[in-house]
Length: 469
Length: 78
Image 1 (tube, chains in turn green, yellow):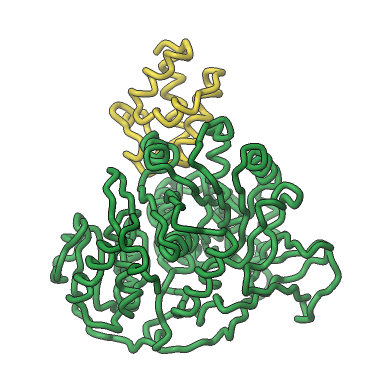
Image 2 (cartoon, one colour):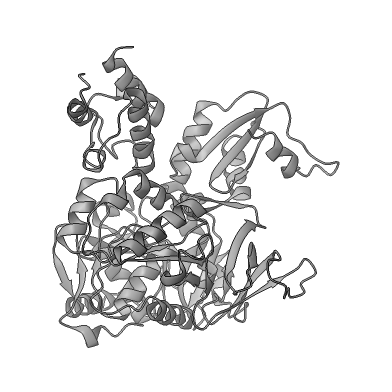
């Protein structure tokens, strides 16, 4: 995928303690790891923003081993269900959690990560083009995965590196998990140009994060809307960060007020602020708002990335040509996934999308051709930038609390759990936050007399949302 | 409520934890005190004492005890 040999002397990774890994070291460690593995197999990579995690990912991709990227903190019950479903040949995980899997033998360990061999051997055949698997809603442990090809990843990397004008002098600092498509795209595109990625597990609410930012001269970071709300709270706009060049935003719609505020800051301080739009289904990125138009077009997610194309369709599927008319957003480009996988036998499937993605997002286009997201067609929310499927969450709750009648709704960035009869028992709240890993402020519980349903017993979500205040 | 009680109440309400968990509590020591919980906590403390914390203090407030020390700068004696 990448050409590490072109950047041998460059620093690829700066870790939390300031340790440096060159591209040459990354390549040779990757080769050592792969020498212990069978090619064209499936490996679960339990990700954390540290160099072992990145090593596994790049080595697997370069050698044709297919990784599924998961958060290392994923609930263990959900992880085991995924292992059962997809029967991976290997687990690549932080060494300190390797003992949680005593049945799997440790093959080798390097850079704080261990390779475990499971009891499965090529349980499901893999399609030749299949490069990478990512979750659609990681926190609920849904077995529904996105299948990405080598060509998908390459197309998106090239496009991102072009519109962000990336080069080897960049030093992005991580603010997002590697298993999350947006976080991964930042790593992908910077390794492509020989830049240095500053890896940290610290959050931006921690002093050490800012110490690393300054000491290692970070030039950019990415953030979901919640990141920008936190930065605003931190009075970021008053911070003096001479090394900073670019801030990017994706993972949900930023409020127009914050968009404007950060665009103004960027303009006044000679920085770039780039608002973008994407989905895992499009490898990562579909649109960007060029920094020089950020203030003028605040509230917009911009135009299609180089090589991509947008259109809007009405309910009958006809293309909309009139400006300022809302329709469902459709994207065409070489970065559109091969398709989904819901079970192991799906991994042999080829390209089912043919480069077209009907996004499920409702949008409009202004007279200058800039797009604005106005709503969402599908039943999911974005909690702290991560997609959460409402039906899957309901499923989790029903499985754990069969006697409880509840449904999930909500708006944009907050989930409302409607509970019939009494309120929400404390154990429901703690179950939900533990299982999904989301902070409890992302959830609201509303007690209702009964769940509104139609005659067929289907939940009437529109009526339900009226009860949410 | 005196200052100590207000300080404890801010933690309890922002993080949804019990008063008994407070002594020795560290940032990221419980699930609720992640970066999002931290922001809620800062809001709660600022409201409780009518102050505005500096950026350097917001990112330095890494434990229940450390917060007490930091608040002294804002003339809040605990």
